Image 1: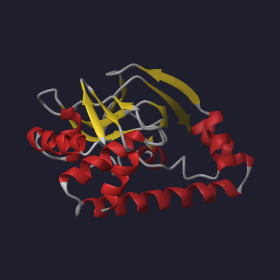
Image 2: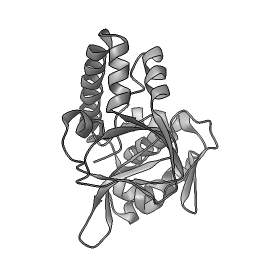
Image 3: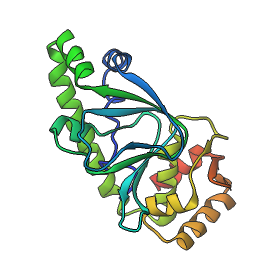
Length: 220
């Protein structure tokens, strides 16, 4: 499963500008340090989260205590909204992949937004349905990508709309888990992107040298 999975969506970003600004303004900002637990599997889903900056690891801890990574989410994505709206317990753990700033949106914030305009309720439902469908489409499309293309796709997700030269705080093991390949296969793919001048690996990070070239690679 990659970062385009249902672990996170662009639900908030897909809302009209005025609705998105209003919703985020009602939320509560929280800062998490790298490695800090944001939510745990089995917790009551009393809110969902919008990533303002940084990255968030989504996965489940195994019996050996190791996190099995499902997705690595970046700025502009949301997570936890499906459990929140469905009123069922959290199904995954969420950990700060880097120092990050999140906006917590709970029931009171959502209710006050919907009360401000009756048309917003239907708009929220429509937007959620569209983002879930887009997530399924991306999962299907990613099945036909090569390992370098899947790696490029994962890096682009974390890269967001930053300028070239931005450093993504992520380990190569995180990327291997995210792409669903061995550490050796990931290393070969990363070396290929480096030799093509697209990225520059570092200790615990990857610097994006040419975001346009990465997008062209994913597009084929």
